[in-house]
Length: 160
Image (cartoon, rainbow, N blue to C red):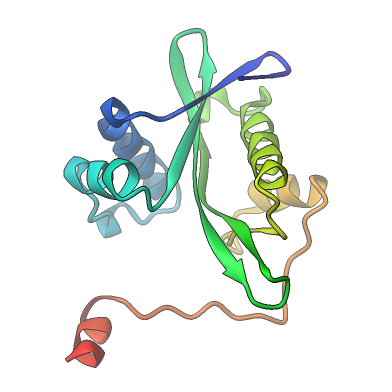
């Protein structure tokens, strides 16, 4: 699929290692690389066996230069599923060339095609370039909402 002069393609099982490389790339950018627990096998199982999420790539010639990982959530208020953007990342040397915008617009197209009621994501509050980009796309921050997380030992403790 082509967006402007950018070719977008869906990830396939053989891309599992590449998906993990992009995940590690965004983790490095966010200074959270030590938090990556995912493995190639986990990516294969979750994305391609269980289909829990999807990935698209932005291409320059034959090279993947950006990716977006997304999945569906559900809004009880809207009564429809939404598209949740987990990660959007363009390799540093390819930024400013429209790859992030092409990926984002492809996600918007997918959300509309699938009759999603909304599209949501989170962004680190220090990531001004991303915040500026999202605002330029018409997105608005939900300042009145706080994201909570239960993970690791706390999750395990409560499950017992």
